[in-house]
Image 1: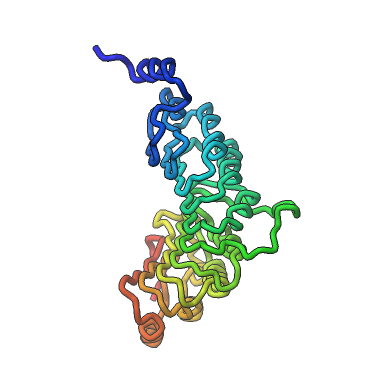
Image 2: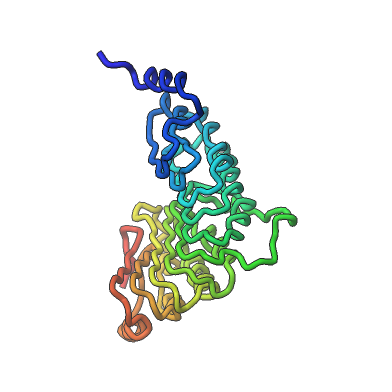
Length: 296
């Protein structure tokens, strides 16, 4: 009969002349059960530049994370995902603390971070990709005045992705970006019902903040299982020519996938406008999120 993995890790720990097992380890992908998660410390070598960490559901293990960025400010790619909803506030503080200590990060993927962490990341010269999987609008509450900076924010940002977010959050975050931000990839996914007005606000924010020449990929996804809008309000959830036309300023789009709660109402003239405005288009998808479409 073999030894339990925890016992093996304990034996290794007791015999190590240092805190970590592999001194030259540079890439780490760590996903173990609750009982084994604390042994992540054995694999955090000082040379790690890329780490993918899956957090088990037990809240006690979240405390294992803060030392990661404090010990390894040279991290270039970091992904921390998976948590129990009851620990969301603890994880928010933990992940925000980690983000505040990153200085050379290029690609960061986490569930949520607070406004102070967002402001810090906005000033980093190397951050190219930011993924937030479960962000909430309160996370964007104004930061204390001493954290503001006169420097242009998100100078190197090229990819911005939100999952399980409200469109209101996406709008507020996009409005933090500088004018003519050189974003190449924007994606937002939501499981909440959004009116035509809210979607129009998102499209307008994108058109006002992002460079019209650099954006290549645009995804706005609304889950098909969202609640049904009231029958008397269907028209308030249909995207028409005027709303969709806001995006036609992005002349180099090659991949576009847009979802409206109950669909799009466009005519032949709008289709020709799209063809002329997006000559580089390779992937194009218009979908409705709710399973009942608007009456024709």
